[in-house]
Image 1: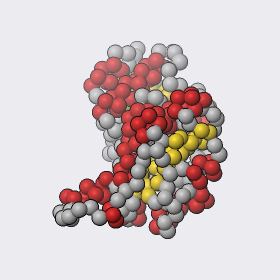
Image 2: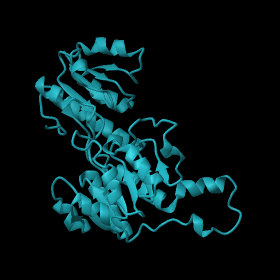
Image 3: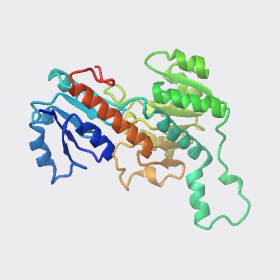
Image 4: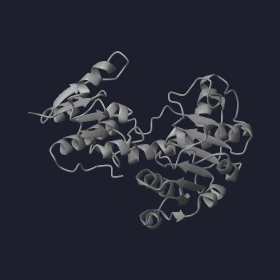
Length: 320
């Protein structure tokens, strides 16, 4: 008998066909309030779970006595209660590496957009306000040959460093839990303390995963360390930053601007002050949002799922 798996996110037919070769699939394109009770009923006999964003905690696992593996279509896994999964002997996997380049492209886009005021000037032109030569008040700041500070020099951080070093001749500073000698050798990156990075960087890029230790990692004190000319970039998770402290830093001119792909509340509230700030570029969490990359992520997650259900160790097993 084939193991039963639940796919709870809209998936390409190629992904579903691959899983169906070895598993029975229960498929939900999305889990709304109407569908959720049906999902919980199906979960009672499920051996595998594939999707992203669903909070997998003790309460949910009480509905899944036969579950063997949870496959996250994401590099992050803050939606998974790893302690509860480990206690029940349930494997958990994610999809690292496959999205590194795409997210790094997004981050460089945020850096350029915030520095050169691209979204703001795009709207200025489209609204018919370009009627003469560009006045100095509309000037942006250079990116090339500036100092980029990367907090979290993992796969994505390294991909950003590569682009910044070779594409823009930027000096790279980084802070990480451990030294990344590969980034130091390839991109001339310099390891330093958090305080030193914040004080010296023209652009501060936060790329840490969300863990209990990184909640509000960047707060009032950290923003005060930054240059008044600094631009802050966050493409990690919204909760890694004290959002109120960031708003205050922007309003008071403690930093020059920001480029944000993530927020504490997503979708972001229409009342959030960040949305009315011209010196802030806001994106709807598009880091890996290209068709090609999302397909690769889904296939990686499917391969993790099938491998685990075949009694083998999945290639991207999360070890805690």
